[in-house]
Amino acid sequence: MSETITKPVSPPASRDPAPRNRQKLSLRQKLSIADVRYSPYLFISPFFILFAITGLFPLLFTAYISLFDWELLDDTGKFIGLENYATLLGDDQFWNALVNTVSIFLLSSVPQVIIAVLLAALLNTNLRASTGWRVGVLVPYVASLVAVGIIFGNLFGVQYGLVNSVLETFGLDRINWQNDRLASHVAIAVMVNWRWTGYNTLIVLAAMQAIPRDLIEAAVVDGANAVRRFVSIVLPLLRPTLIFVIITSTIGGLQIFTEPRLFTELPGSSNGGAENQFQTVTLYMYQSGFQYQDLGYASAIAWALFLVIIVFALINFLLTRRIASSGEADR
Amino acid sequence: MTAVTLLGRRTPASRGRRGLTFGDRRARFWVYGLLIAFLLGSAFPLYWSFLVASRDTSILTEHVPPLLPGGNFFANAARVFDTVPFWKALGNSVIVGGVVTLTTVFFSTLAGFAFAKLRFRGRDGLFLFVVATLAVPTQLGIIPLYIAMSDLGWTGTLWAAMVPNLVTAIGVFWMRQYTAQVVPYELIEAARVDGCSMIRVYWHVCLPAVRPAAAFLAMFTFMTSWNDFMWPLIVLNADNPTVQVALEKLQAGYYVDYSLVLAGTTLATIPILIILILLGRQIVAGIMHGAVKG
Image (cartoon, rainbow over all chains, first blue to last red; front, top):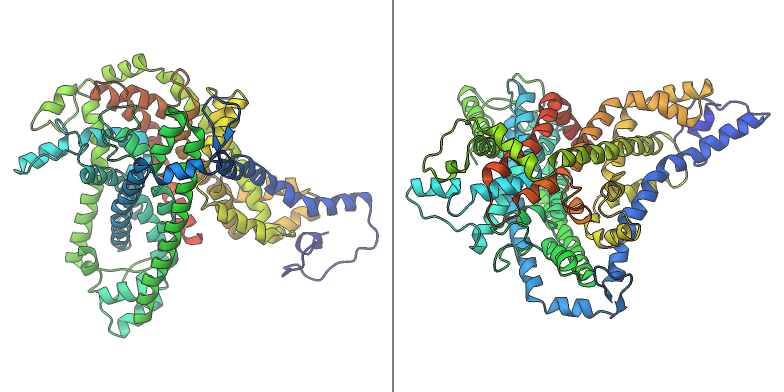
């Protein structure tokens, strides 16, 4: 019966030795063949069913709702075509939120990837208690986003915040972390970096350890110095991993919600500061849908953001490929 | 920058169990120095929140704040339990996290087994679909999801918090990669010869073999669920919150009592911190293993 496992419906590479005779098929055997043929579908079906219901369908239905004037408590909405999108294009608050999101995203992802690569290089040396260090860099990851938002909201407080006290001790001016647009973006980016750098470091470290040693040794024999080895060999070989890290941080980073929501002087508000100076697109979507109760408009925002994410993911993908492959060409 | 210049000076062939090795004694000193600095920076915000939680808010007005904890932590923690239904929130988070973890691990190992070890028509295409869904920002589908939950009358109940998270693409992906490596075909075939049905092969052969990866997936899922905020905020209310929603409510108000609020964040972080301390090695191995295969 063993052949039924490895060479059923589709033929590819059977690990099974010579096929065995199958002359008579009892009911038991038929059942067994059915088991082999259909069980795989049964096993994967929970994921596909649940994903269809709770992931794919809602996303598509969001596009449908975005064509309606649909209030939070309505059973159904009124069809208005593309009006929500037309409003969106002329909505200063949306564009403001989009600029904020991109700004926070860049401030958080660029340093994060750079630090993660450098830190991974440090961890990749011959350390004592290497596991201890790795667990150590992961510590911020255990803090919840809410805790991070609250803690950093406190640290970056204008009047009593520790960051400002330290600045003052060094004779610098206090910075209004909440009200100044750029400063608030920096503060939020610091939270994101703080929580995620260690996690990404481990991913990059894993990729570094997968680099074959003879490649490096060959470069040493050829007289490449450390910097050259790092730029010409290690970085290009990290390319797939860096693409992975950058794409995931794009998808997550552009949806940033919790940190800006909690980083406010007016807790519970979704304004993102008095003049929306750090309101992100997801925050604006939440505000439109669940506070202004306009689900149709919120859905239009969601789809607009979805498109932005796709565009950014593609740009990042192309850029990363370019950068990494130019490094490869040097070699 | 510093790190780059530190790499090297010594041939990578010397010493070292794994991969690249760099640095002589002086470089080594710098490596440890930088790492210690980074770790202190990493740990400081958490320590600070405990510090404020263990004193009273006057610490915030002091120009040079004390760096040792005071004795008020338990008093502040007790106030957390008085201010918001924190016990209930803890219970809810444990229930939601527990259920979500169980179903995610079960469905992911099952699908991972099928994708890795069984052959069926459309397998590669379907798996590609799973990988593609990793890139779908499902958070943007929350509006219809909310409408569905409220039509079902589930808003305000834990069902609403659990149902959208019962299985994840990352879980399926991860278990497939691991299962492909560790479960030998010979074992599956042997079990089949002994008359095991497919589901029993899964249970008796696959599951024991993938236990380390499943354990990691469980921890990872539980942590993600425990820290989830946006969705519970939307579907749950202040009377029946998860820990994160309760924390947010703790902070809501015109005057923020930081000793109280940061006592709350400390309480909410401790369970996950304990998991990290106890199982750090496995969590690190899990993240790194998944990364290489990814």
